Image (cartoon, rainbow, N blue to C red; front, side):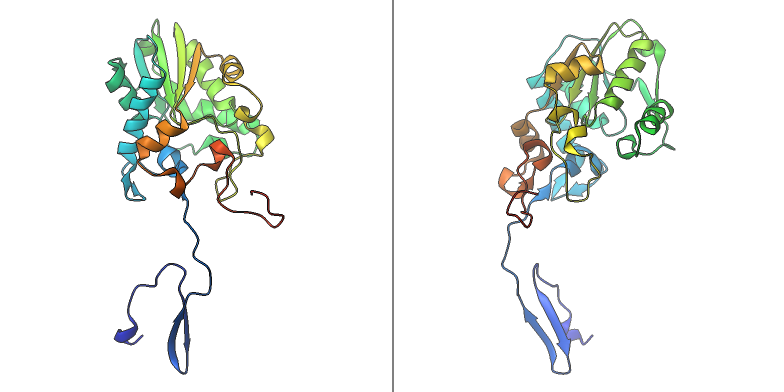
Length: 251
């Protein structure tokens, strides 16, 4: 292309190139953007800068805020690797409780929450995560994870930590309860399969077998990321989708 046409294309801009040259137009009405909050909670690598914000810093702040909102007496803060690590460090730093990586992840196993069947997911958890028993045995453990989807993975992890000799297991989650499906590319289950859509926090705690369960509040999560609620998509927690489907209902 001729150097005089070398420039950045603006959002929503359409370029038409024909025998008369290059024409620019904006045929679609400008829409407000809504960036995916879950990128900072789980999907992005901690060394990423996403939406102008450090993912690692966001997760540290989520852990700190989680400790403020849901304190508990314990001996160790243990992350569910890998996405729970940064939040667990933040939780430990604010609470003053020792941080130890007492669960080791096998990096040859992928993300278990998107596996197609429960039997594969359960088997994957046992292959993916292994406890360090001499760190866990006899201690009160705070497990920090990024989210609970179906609840089955968390249940297996709590069982595993108890089998390793934990006296107490307290689960802390660095986002609100995931109660709605995502229709924008995240492979989450139908809403009926999301544990937070059909169980209270107390019921979920009993189901996974923890001594206590605490989720980070929506405000706490957004404050930690540093993004305005009007520019983010938090539909998987709130059910408020930024786009509409054909019948005028939220997606």
